[in-house]
Length: 112
Image 1 (cartoon, rainbow, N blue to C red):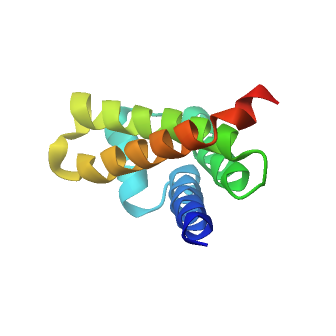
Image 2: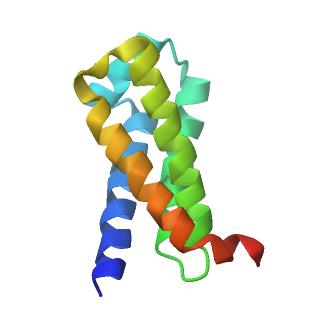
């Protein structure tokens, strides 16, 4: 039960962050602007996060969702290290580590 709640919570975080990025809402829009991310790159990046959220709650596809989340969180972490600063890097690092744990736990999904 705790594992299911963890996946649902992680999926919710990715879904909300992806929607905020795709729509350019508040902080996510400002950060995308600071990175110089054009709309044609921002929207697919946001949809990538939403797709990761969907896969995280699908049985047998959690590994794919975790891998997609790992890529998204890794890109966010790299953006923080190179441009945005370390003030909000800890949440990106936490998402990266959570996705890494889920990927290791559900790596069998990638073999199907």
